[in-house]
Length: 388
Image 1 (cartoon, helix red, strand yellow):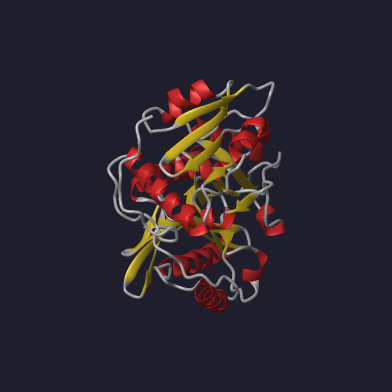
Image 2: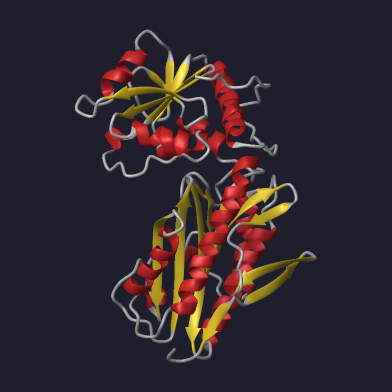
């Protein structure tokens, strides 16, 4: 194994914000963060079981196709050592397609034996930590969650590509859908557009006509589209998640829907505009409530979560008035507003220069909203011909 390059050890609680040239350097910087965390907690090493932490440390490796959680690969980190514990079923593919040349050692277990004996052997006589409850190991899940939240300089490029993929897939699906198609058919078309680019559709909600007025979470059914449709999708690629929504109307946009969507866009624009480093989520949400009130929907904020931290986990933490920690550079956030029959939802990354939109609309009608001298483009409703 080639050893990681030496570098200064950053604080384990601060994000890696410098632009790094390649994936190997990104992993080396994360290993330095882990080394600082081990010293702080006075432990010799730690296990990373959770897939979110696995993809974070490896800068994008994903254990695809493993149905049994007990067969998932595990990372063991200690000092400059980084090891992958993997089943003999998965180890070849992991290194050929995901981890080659990145400085990882392999400790392999046979599928018919399982990984527990190997983990027990590594624990023997050592003070270790783990990101999930494990006997005789110190719990470090919360510390690792804080470490993985900031999107690193290396990861931003891939994240932007993912955001563009989500936007394109949603918008192409809306342009191609037809009246009388079912929500299930529409979800299938969206899934095809995502999967053919090597990404994974984690969640899709398709709301035909008035279903969004009756249900807050709609999934998808055999209901057919006649007048309008709202689609929200969460897509994962290289272990990162992005979520966005788009709305289409067949024929002129209903007056009530137009009014609701205009308000939803103003609400999400107000959230995004205020999402700067050190902003307090409680204050952002309070400002959003005022926008709800101004638009005649004073109590609608209670019906649907306003936003959440995302990134390595689809939902890392829901943001509420009780969220005490200020927003930090590098955090990925999804803000959303659901009003009546429509939804406005997009994902971005917080930067010192303002929000970096990941799922910005492409060739799509936009509603430009000006807040404190800055313009924010929110996806408007796409109007299609009636019956087409």
